[in-house]
Every structure is written in structure tokens, then in C-alpha cells.
Length: 207
Image (tube, rainbow, N blue to C red):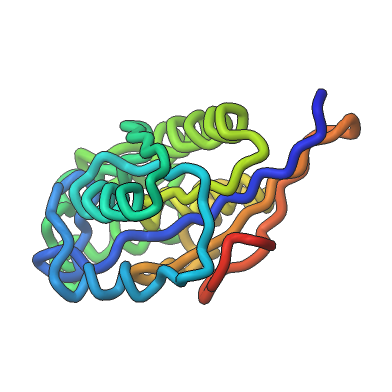
């Protein structure tokens, strides 16, 4: 196995049109504030070899802008869509709490066993995200890569990198709009090791 170091920067989309809500599979584009958040999170010193993006509008439009700016490949991956929140989609947390508060509380306490009504099971969501994560580790090995995605997606990837149990993956990490995380993947004769290098303000792709 050839030695390699792959650096992934993950960025959550900015604010979509319609503001905060359980959006999930609802495909809203970025608001003007969201565009400003995303552009403000990118530094002149950033240096990527490729971009991978969720195909959802709030991610792919910005990813395309960056790919054009840096003249680098853009890969769209359907597996990186946000989790589907079922009947809660399009509703604010306050609205869901008012009408379905007990079930919402159970979801956050135990998301694996308490799927939102009509929603996507967390285990299934996690499986498709980690399949994508492992695919791009191999396909883009040794490169600096930006992944433009969603809060839930970032939580699944970080939980995998840090061996956080899936039951705690949603509650263990805050992922505000345009938040960035960096994970370094080292591969050698000793195996593969994933490390969370940073979470929050990141100004360059070199660890």
C-alpha cells in the first residue's frame, strides 16, 4: 500500500432561502446572506485539487463557482444529500416542538432508534455517507479536497473519523452555516488513520 496523505476540508452550505428549518431533502438555493457566508469562509490561501459536492442547490451552485475560480475538477455525489426529515421538512424547530415535541426530543436523544415520521433512518443515512466518504478517500488519495455538503453529512463523517458512536453523532458536533472542518487521512504500511485537524475557522488547506 502506497503511503499517502489526503486532506479533506468540509464546508456546510450557508443559509438557504427560507431561513432555518428542518430542510432535509427540500431543495432550496442559497439566500443572499448564504452566499456571503460561503464566500466569507474561503481564504485566498486555500488550495484544493478537487471539489466534491452534494447535488442539492444550496451546495452545488457555490461548489461550481469555486471549481470555475480554481479551474479544478468538480464531482457531484448523490450520496452526499442531507438526511430526509420526513413530515418535519419545511418546518422550524419551534413549530415541530409545539406539535410533536416528545418525538423530536426522542430523536435528538436517540436518533438511531427514533426516526422522524416518514423520514430516513439514521443508520441508512450514515451508510450512504460513509460509502461516499470511503470512495473519495480512495479516488482522490494524496490530494487536497473540498467537500461542500450539509450539517448532517459533516456529523456523520466526523463521527466516523473520531469513532463517535452513531447514537451520539448528531448531538456531538455543532455545524453552523458555512462551518468548516478539516480531516487528514494518512495511509501507510501500518494502515489508515483519520484525524480531525480543525473545526471552525480554517484559513488554508495545508495542515
